[in-house]
Length: 273
Image (cartoon, rainbow, N blue to C red; front, side, top):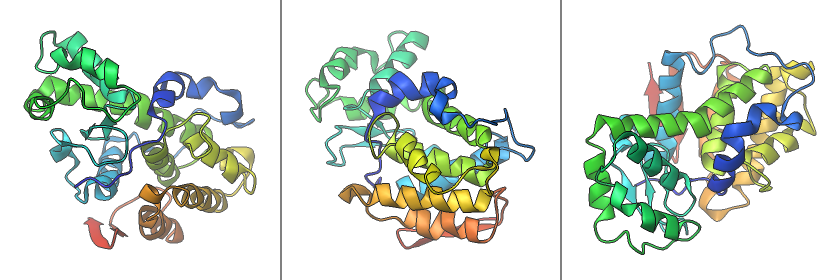
């Protein structure tokens, strides 16, 4: 079962974060650089590690590719949650995904649900989706085109912007991952618990490397702010994905997120060799 950690502001992410993050003035440090010298999280090997780390928290499994057909209503008020990043019928990103898939593959098995997805957006309703939508989602996941669409939306809305902001802040792979994991859970925008607000809270006490700050000190501040945000919501109150995972890597000064990696989430142990 997927843990209830889908974002609280997915529509804002789609409207603002994916399209304008790099251009948003307060998110750009005054001495930001386009990249950092070390290998970034967008390196294929590092990205695979990132996907496994998130999957350990979201799916209790390192096999993130097994999640394309996943779908259920986890009772968090966001309708159906599905796929590799927890696309939700109630928050807009599932609608955008199915629209993208339909643009690429007209007449696909999910296309007929687009009117219903537009109606239920912003609610937890299944109106027009039941009973066939879950089964058709799983059928669509057999199509490589639908799997590519999930990958592309994940990268466009969550992974790409988070990594770009991490690099602009002068962070290496671990810091870029900390940003990505925060965006996956919290979304972004004006929500006081969003990624943008978490980052702003961290900046009150520490500067990132691009501002002349120490990377470890800044990441400690960011993770402190992340934990604070998680504890404001019951569904996110288990902070082990930070405390016994990201914080463990930080304590070991593994800023490049190099394997071997050992961590725990929700009490379960994981290893990447």
